[in-house]
Length: 203
Image (tube, rainbow, N blue to C red):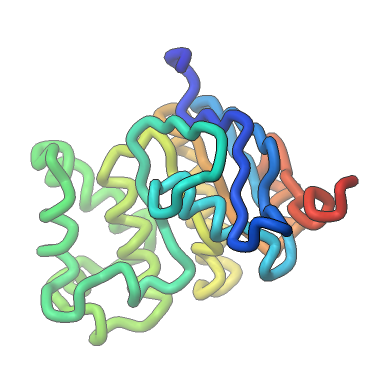
């Protein structure tokens, strides 16, 4: 891949049912600084595409290349271990400890988090608080590609907007691939919108 490309999908074909492919000869290129939104009804392949990019599923045909990525999922409780504190789980995945300790307080403030929450276990936080901790962890991982799956759906509108603005501030370092049902959000932030409803219908 070229230096500015963080995601390259070439002629991707994938199907759970071989007679009904979800993706057929699908192509996508994402460069640093870009936001691409994936929209579509449930069952159209939005989450499947993320699983393919994360190498959790194997395509029938085609190739997917990525730079370093991190994910922010809709359900934050599924992405944290229940037995350890939030801070422990952030420290475990951050290789650059200097960057972590220099920047964590900045991100905490921008995400409207109380630092004391990081000493708690996931079940002691609300869904909105835990989602912001998930976003905090992903940003501290310094990804080149940030996969965002309905990450603001558990947040109130004001905080959701501030979080999206924070993610966009990092486009000088990465690109964002965003799954959303919110077309107005997609139109507000995206350089490109891929409508999987149209992909399915062959339009």
